[in-house]
Length: 381
Image (cartoon, rainbow, N blue to C red):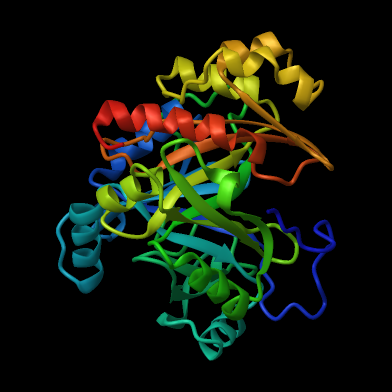
């Protein structure tokens, strides 16, 4: 069953109780931020734009800010923990491995957003506070979501620095590619424990005023061996989209079960990156060493019969193992990386949309069978 919100392409609602301007940053806690930043610079074509570390007064942590188009990633590691924040980061990496700790959201008024969220049941982590430097003022606040993930609410309309006060501009680590590998964050997917999906959907409905965009249950996301359920929440303008997955009872361990086991609880499973040219993106990323999930040739033998014509020839799709899905609004092209760290946790999706605002429902079976093949190799199916 699939449920769609009304007027999905509407612009900002005048009565939106929790207006957002988009994703501000995806913040990772990692064991070695310098090496992580180099990997995402070379393999994902991102550019280092800002830095915070001992050289500019940050004695406890080092943070590297990378950007592509409107997408911003921040990689932070602990140098020597001396505060609760440093100890939290160190403990987080030890328990969960490299992972996402913050899905930061840009808002027009951080104080108002925080007040609304807390009034509607959110657990506040940081009350609104200002930081300033020669580039202006940023207002931030933070609320808790699933697992140890947080949403920092960032108001930066009066700031023109490279990232935040405390950061300095930095030169790219490597020569930037001639063409961007991707342009924006399309959506961020969270995995939660069995029975918790509806609880967190209700959280976003109530705390942020998000609406339910899509729903996938039952046979929508199931193979012979494993299954999961998923619902997608989004703000009124669809600038911020959060699919939330939970495992479903099946013969064997699902990808969600595997994630929860190796991550040590709920957290961000994957980040979908929007590209205008998925063929070029995949070629560049493969050449840089990124590994993608495989798709059997049989998937492409009948692809044209149900997916119709796309801008990319079937033989090119077959060569690069790119998937296609079509709905009433158009089609999309997508492909998924293998996990980007040793633990089978965080991975990425590349997505090119042509009208469709879906999430690849027609590819679920092929995708999850591909994931199961990787689980079997790891001995985790």
